[in-house]
Image 1: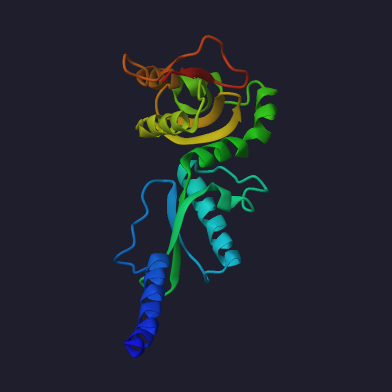
Image 2: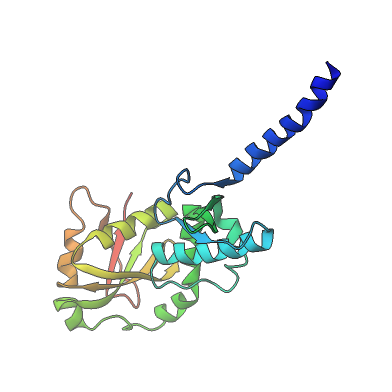
Length: 224
């Protein structure tokens, strides 16, 4: 009986190691595909901490462009990239290499998008008229839009979804954030006032703000 037990120990150890490896690395067929703008997959050289962190930093850059095209990372954001991660796992690529699928926390990424524009906020607020000309706003073109009442990342994501979902608006890019407001650069095919009026409505979240914001061509208020 003792001989049987001794023979079973290596077999059990091998089984445990196999299960642990399966939890760390999955095949391309079994891997869960990336979902939503806060998730992406990047190639990774290996599974060391340094290699993983480098891949996460690359993934953060990709996700930031998915969420807010044109935004730039603050200087220290790449070093802090692992702190924005909600989940990650390795998997085998179709080419045989190793990939890392990274899912970032939407709230953390939303705060990062706002922080990436803080340096520009003061400059834009101090320079009225940096937006589009009156003619461009009246006939269509590029304009600066300020929206206040954005008090969490969910509201920010919903705002971007609404604006980018309007076929008359293009290049909706966050440029600055201050307090509960965000300044966006938008390009419109039609008069901006007409487009913004159509975004309101009985069940809408956007309405004309009580006070205009300095440096913005139009100012709206977000309501939950």
